[in-house]
Image (cartoon, rainbow, N blue to C red):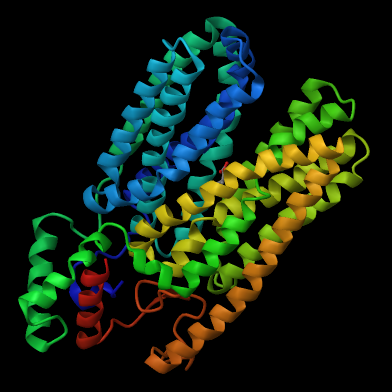
Length: 492
Ligand SMILES: CC(C)C(=O)C(=O)O
């Protein structure tokens, strides 16, 4: 993205003001998006008895919901690029509410797959991505801490929804609970209403500005001078809504491969923690309490990690911090089989909660760091649909290992090995990326006039809005800015 000074089309993120209201809305919206599918498991036993199905058939409700939430990423990105975050989140909240209210009248498990899994799941997709995207529009200098605070909505909402769902279940059964939860999900519309548009105008202002930029660019020869050549760029029209040129972006590809691999071992330990404790002879309440310990530590870890990532010592090399947190997760899982009693599992849950929270806090911040806030809108959609595959595969593969060997340790070892591998891959590849970025920045000449080093090592969006020790980058020269803007128009 070109620096604001070059075109005047973008506004510099306020890093506060109304941004705190937006952050609160994102906290709520992201919290529902991640916690709601997890908290639904409380109803599965009664639903299984009511419809006379197997547990795995009921568990597909959550899997379909998760797939719709992640698989809906690209559509969510396209809608945000076209309409902005606010209307998309409001529509997503409506869809979630209608889905759950409809589910309270379902007479078959298939109807639950449609209402809860597809409708509400897709509604959560229209909540999750836009909420993360708008954080990058309102925050830059404080973006890591903002992302950490917004992502803390997930454990907070999980700690709230789990007992609430149990209360609703005990007093209203699953049908009444779904009706009430449908109404509660309408709060996503309220959260979305806080997302006041900022930055690139998408209305007539932007179109007029784009036209001026194109006319000027044509005059100086950047764009195709003939109508036919312009027509060839018709495919670029698609890129206006989903920037597929990201698949040529080095940092994006490193992030994509590392995260897709990571998610193969990310969720299974959470899914099987309580069953593993019961398998060790621990009572069900003590087993469930392990998840509460994990969620409480996670709740503290996310904003704390955001704060650390925001520091001038960590932010320029945040990709290393993210890589370490993934490998740290893996080390915890590899050591879990050494826990021979409840105290050992409590210690594992504390460290797992810390490592899990660190990864979640930086999950989207590191992607923004690599591609910049403008391209992040498309990047997040492309990444989530790719992650969907391994997210869905992780727990069943873990379950298959448990069934095959009759021992949980192989599941923990698989997850630990995969995450250590993912963390190591990201560390090595980000080292390479940082070095390449430094060379490219020297070649382009964006040296920090005071320190004589590349303005912003460690980021692929060196030309745009990154801050270096609080210093905003020098605006691009007019020619560079114009070329970037033109490229931005044709690319995006
Ligand atoms: C993948 C992460 C962000 C998650 O599931 C959570 O926040 O609970």
